[in-house]
Image (cartoon, rainbow, N blue to C red; front, side, top):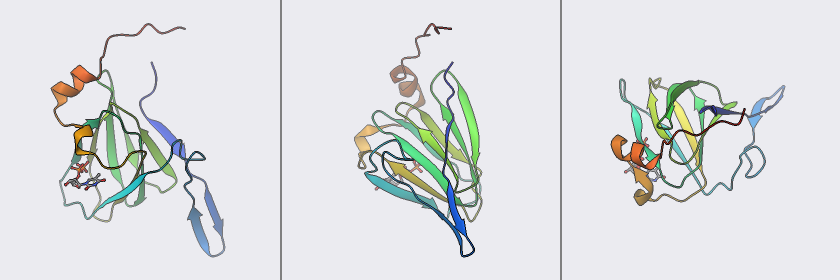
Length: 141
Ligand code: TYD
């Protein structure tokens, strides 16, 4: 079964002055970046997300602090701590995402391959399961 959590390792260009990370469309980011947004100042005990997208690819990178990202494709659920600016996680189409346990200082940056479109959201988990078409596939190995 395909792994849900696909991590992207973002190399650091470091020297005696400090560190730098570069994100480039079709290079270390596997799509054309059309939108970037940041989630920060998340209040204690608050979780976010709880939706999927019909047609959107995203990469989430925690620049400061950390949070726990849960991904669900309707068949399986996996989670990863986003706790370093060198660690990106790919969130593909029809993936239910939840973000939990934000530290007070957390700055979560998200890169997206589409402009913001409220019509693209699936906010109901039952509807998500229907859309995710979780007919079992036969693996070839
Ligand atoms: P929302 O998608 O609910 O955030 P989360 O996925 O963290 O739960 O977005 C919160 C608000 O921000 C909502 O009013 C829509 C707005 N928004 C934009 O205007 N542009 C964007 O690119 C995003 C992601 C959200």
